[in-house]
Image (tube, rainbow, N blue to C red):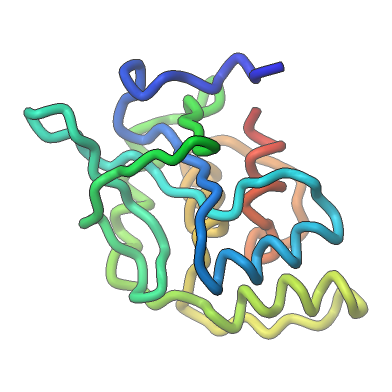
Length: 166
């Protein structure tokens, strides 16, 4: 069953979320960590930042070169667009997310998700002033008024985040 807030791209507006099933080494590490707790296929999350007059979307995301807003949206067969949770302030979500552009990506934080799953909870190897994709988007939603009871936003894997917002 498709969750009610999974929408077609044609119905999307700036601030809505995109969950991806992406290829690549970092995505493979995320999938490995997620398989310990989760069974889904979402290993990356971004926000829809702006739409060009021709209808193409630019996404904001935390990627290897940091938090950016300069990539065109390319949806794959397992990628989905999710409307922001009810009562979330879209303007605040976008303001917070955009304010993070230029911050570094937390490669060590990705590894810490796997470490956290395999060791006691006090082990945290996150570097300060860095983001991973799910953390920057989840924190943006929190800034916009959507709260969830995870212990550490930096340990939220994309598929876990997808389950929480759908």
